Length: 150
Image 1 (spheres, one colour):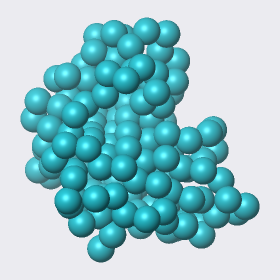
Image 2 (cartoon, helix red, strand yellow; image 1 turned 180 degrees about the vertical axis):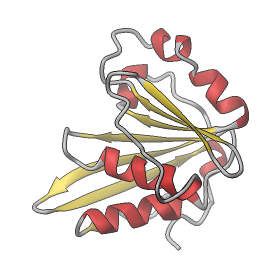
Image 3 (cartoon, helix red, strand yellow; image 1 turned 30 degrees about the vertical axis):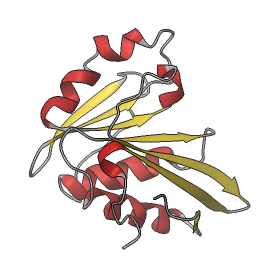
Image 4 (tube, one colour; image 1 turned 90 degrees about the vertical axis):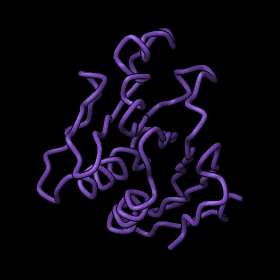
């Protein structure tokens, strides 16, 4: 069951959500982030990666590299930015399947996959609501029935 919409007042609240989700994600799973430019996708992804690696981890946006991979304490983390893809197959050519074999994937712009999404995923839709962000989470596969709010 998916939780009700969350309201994130600021960047600190967005980062806190990323830290919470880092405690929930398991190898083989993905978090898919959808939202307009500036909605907070990269802020959320950065907080999640830092929670799984170290607070000092440099986490640049993978807009031009398409994917950045990190050695987490327990498993590898791959951060994909699919904005520049022209074909869904390109995501698999750059290693999306391999990333999920023994690690996790954070995917920005998952709509570029045209429905070819990982089955065990948490979709997060972020929309601007004044200065705040509204977040809707929808769980699929292994994410279903998992407590996402605490």
